[in-house]
Length: 323
Image (tube, rainbow, N blue to C red; front, side, top):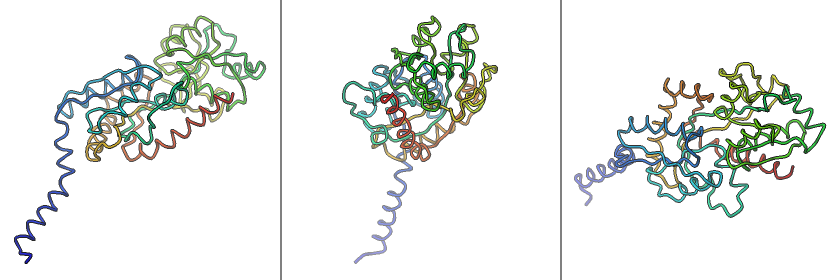
C-alpha cells in the first residue's frame, strides 16, 4: 500500500530534484576559474577579459585567472577551450576573429563555434578605423575608393592576418564599393599598422587601440570609422556613411563562451554576473576609454545571435577568397 508517509517522501524527493539546479549553481564556484584569451596581452579582447576577470573574482569571491593562448590566429586557444571539460571552470573570452580565422586555416580545424560552445554573454563591441599614412595622397575615403576603382588590384591593404577583422573589414569595403585591392597579411596588427606608417602599404582597417594613438601622434590619417557615430577621441574623423560609403558599419564583438555540456545553471549564473558587470558605470567608462561601446547580450540573446554572426562572417570570408 502506498502510505501517506511514502507519498510525503516522494513529494520531498521531487522537491529536492526541482531545487537541485539552483543549489548546483549556488555551490559554484568551488575552485579558481580560468579564462582563456586566444590573443596576445594588450589586445582589446585581452584587456576586456582582464577587467571582467577582476570584477568576476570580486563578485564570486573566487580567483579568476586570465590565460593568454595566442597563436594560429586564435585557433590554438579556442580549440583548447573546446576540448576542456564543460564544468564552468574553463571559459573562452573571444571576439569575431577567433571565429573567422578557421576558414583560412591551413590544416583541419576540429571545433565549430556554434556546436562546440555555449554562449554565456556578450559584453562589448568596437568599430574599426580606416587609416592611411599621414602624408598619403588619399585625404578622404572617397579618394581611396576612387583610386581602387581606377587601379583595380593595385592599391594595397594590410591586416593582422587572413581571417582577422582587419582583413574582412577591408573585404567588406571592396564589396560595398565594387572595388578590388590587394591584401597583405601580417602576423599581428602591430606590424600591419607599422608598414602603413612606413608607406609600404596603402591603407589598413584597425581597432581603436591600434590607430587612435597614431592618429593623435600625426603618424596616420583617419579616413573614416565604421561605427554609427564618430569616436570621442578623434572627433574630426567622419563615419563611413558621412565619408560617402553608406551601409559600411563593421563591429567586432567580445564575449564569453563555455565548452558545450556546461550545466545550464552554471551558464545562467555566469551570464547573470557578466551582464551585471557590463551594466556597471565602471565598465561603461572602461569601454569609452578604449573607444569600444557596451553591447550586452545575455546567454539567450547571444545564443540566438551567434549562428547569424557566424553565417555573416562566413559569407565575407568566402568573398575574400573569390576576390
